[in-house]
Image 1: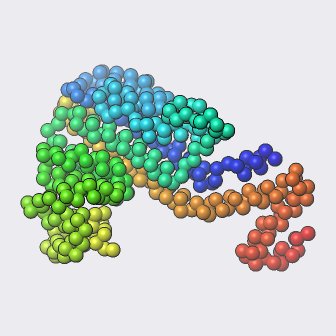
Image 2: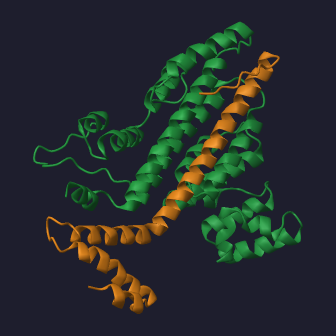
Image 3: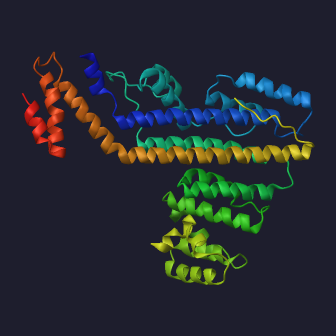
Length: 286
Length: 99
């Protein structure tokens, strides 16, 4: 009888599979945090890199011992406090980790550990412990939170190393932002591009790409009204035609954009396939 | 935990190496998360099928609870057959087995 009650009252198959996927995603997040902490231990940011073999091995071994069996929150705190890179995890991200623990250790119920970790006290009148479901929407938000935390550390890390080739590195980072836009991960793309929107040290093309992708991410997040004046005032005359095309699309001038797209393809600057594969120009095909 | 223990030759190269590693980690994580999200999307699309199938099984199991109805085990046999008859037209088999 108990088995039947347990079967009838447990979360649905979908919720259990998504909960399992969340546990996997948190594990991946934890592993990445460990890899980043190891990287910063071996190549300390904010100081001249010491490549002495003994010191190198010693730092790696010491950090490996410290990271063993430590959760992601502790790993991010080590990175923030000891290497001055990134910041401790946001409350939203800590809630994701606490939910993972509740799924693994408490059958997905908001126990006292969950409440203490998240600061979410349960009401006195609540008769039973609440179920912590993982819906598709929750999984997307959780994944975004972890992605943003990772990206923030990488961005701070790039700034923390002294290097003459910064513009090239930021251009490569623009590639990651582009892939995030392709995957519809707009919050993380926004975080990356926003940092370089007003960076005058970059190559004009890199700077323009960051600007367009920042605006595109904001528009996709339903905040296009905030930047419409900036887009309108953007002077693209000294840039390649493709940026004028991006401006027309962002302003919603699709007839003008379609005409410009035909001219760009006719000039041989790019192919029709390559042009329309870019997320910003997909609307021209609709 | 694994780590890359290769040693660059000069401090300048070491910085470049560290930056390349940083970008590589972000790229790897973006790919991982994209794969996870795709899996979540597929699970979301299959949700109706998965949950509907499971709810039918639970329904059958509850009907078969001997403490609620000592004769209900028959239902546990009959119910799937009724569904099969509906789905696949196995009337001959059902007729033979129905009590």
